[in-house]
Length: 320
Image (cartoon, rainbow, N blue to C red):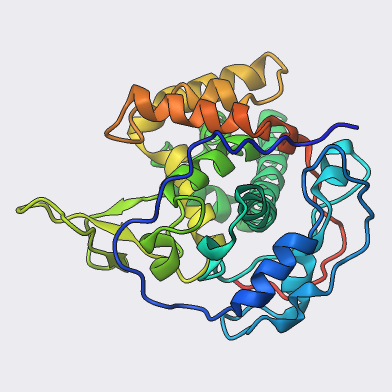
């Protein structure tokens, strides 16, 4: 059986700064779901039934009890190809995730929360790319493009700063991020869901902002004279969507986009490990940051998540 090997040797950074309670989750119930959820133990016999251990959660965060129960889905079944990822979008991570004692259990909760978000953001992008290809075909054939499509193309061009009508440029930018890479970056940037920034502002990817129009959190110990803040979001989904847009748009990640486009052109599967090598400008730590991403992806076999499929059944109300 193919399984994800959760390695305790992979660094899990300690949370930094002070934490303000955001969503209240009962500690006993959180440990219960971690222990009762199907874990990545290669010697365990997994059943595929949903655990009801989450019934004790306080859902004041905006997530329904149905969302929380869905965290018991079986990741082993997902990576083996006979299970699907439920369409859940928790508003925030459990505020007491750090209280889960077992490293593998804490990671399981983190993976099960983040993976559905990444897949849903990628799904929308793939739908957009299909529309872009259709419009490119129409334009090449000399067929008139409808007004609504022209407006959509104009909005997309403005978002990415490309020439209006340049579908090729949009296709090179508006593309997915492999779950293996997104989850690895979320893990290191949020200290596996325990950091002050993700707990206070759903900031999973440590994005900086310099504008007052964005909600943000001032880092503890920010150097005098610096004005940046860590951008905060209304939901975890918003954080993931903003992170993907950042990689697709910012000039610092041009190499990332070029390597991804080359993989597409050659018909290759997008390789999270290879793409991580292009992100030395994502962090001030440079090469050390890339090495950490490689360690997280390899040490947790995250590439196995890249083939995960979303359920076609919408079981929850969208949060956005």
